[in-house]
Length: 295
Image (spheres, rainbow, N blue to C red):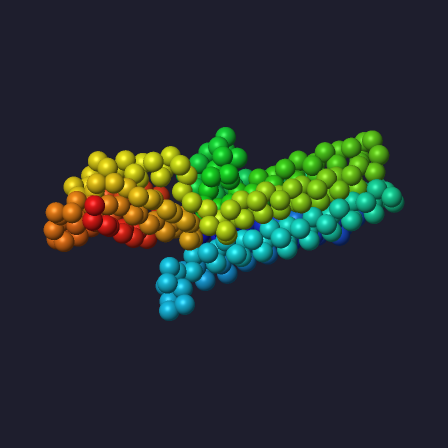
């Protein structure tokens, strides 16, 4: 089970309880929206764990290439159901409080919860960044390029949670010193944030679900390796790939070989090519199939 998912689940569980209690004792709509946000995040992690457990079953009679895409499916459920429902409920609560603003009680309690949540969410985000071998400044490119659905979910969740806490803080200050209506506005903005996160995750997972290929640069490197390392290859007909799990790739290569090459030489060549491809692209777990045709 992924360390980032476990860290996010523990952090969000503690934060959801703290925010829920704070919302109960303060009557803050924005804090209630954030409590819903963190509760939805806990559900997200639970579903991601279900996906990881199913994906780990490997090959079977009915799943010849394994069940890695279970990760994509359950992460997609996270995007469509939990983020979407949480966002819509927060928007509803925000509109309700804007039409009937109420002063916040015990604002210092909310401030303490915000600090507590920032510490835990920041820690969970650091674990996810470490697992994805990326830095905070590369967050957006990592989300756009990652093929690990659980990393996508955790990075989007944790970065979104920190943004939600910033909105909550602004809503608290403005509600306390300007007008109580800003508490409802903050809840509305948190709901819109959740819908935005849902949209980003939906777009990224859609690509993986329908069969995203390796990028052009990686495909070019694969072709160059074959040209440089193969002793029997005459022409590369096609290099096709598809992500079939988190960082797991189905790679199919079709090439023409010398018509005077012996079966043993072709077999050894294919074996060496597979070995070199696996070593060159260690970040991916590859299932490699090479079709050869005499030229």
